[in-house]
Length: 249
Image (cartoon, rainbow, N blue to C red; front, side, top):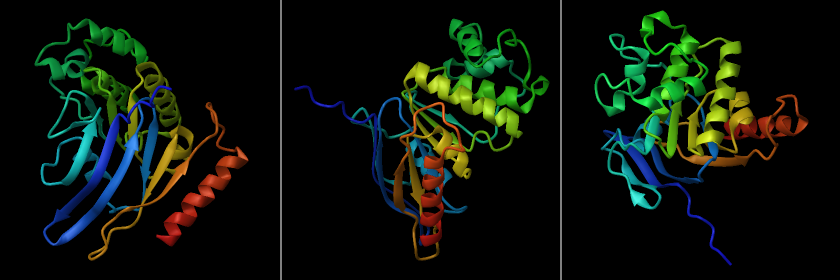
């Protein structure tokens, strides 16, 4: 009998202090390849800080982050990070922004056109960021996050600054890209409906106080098959469980 594949991402005992204040403490969880997991919790509980620590962008965090059982000690091409704002470099073309991980002015890389087609923006490789709408810029940011072929994508509220219609389209795009590339995806969001719509599992973080660091207090599996309808009664029950968990925390 073959053994199950180990998790792609293993987070063990991750903690972060700022001076005497612990923001989060002893956070541990796993992600499988192709899985989408959301982190939710009240403002100030350290969701974005936790994401930075997993990305290797915070050397002062304590704990262990493993990808394919290899310790991560800093930023890695195996991890793509997508922020709330697109953060495109205004003096570079769309193509050069997408291929930035390969070096300056590398927009001629053939992967650029492939990714632009995947995110529904063929033919704009020569455009500058100022010529893009907010939704288009975030699609370019998604393409940039996928350029190096990461095994793990970390997203920090990537759709919160766009309108509802664009947000829905970007959510669909994220689902299709995750399926096509078989990446593990960790999403920070304040939107419970977004978490229920996208996620295989949802991790709820408790509030953080002066003497009370944030921790994972509940894990909720979302078993409904995709595509999901947010009016599905089974999702109502999970939404209630999340709200109850937030209230209890």
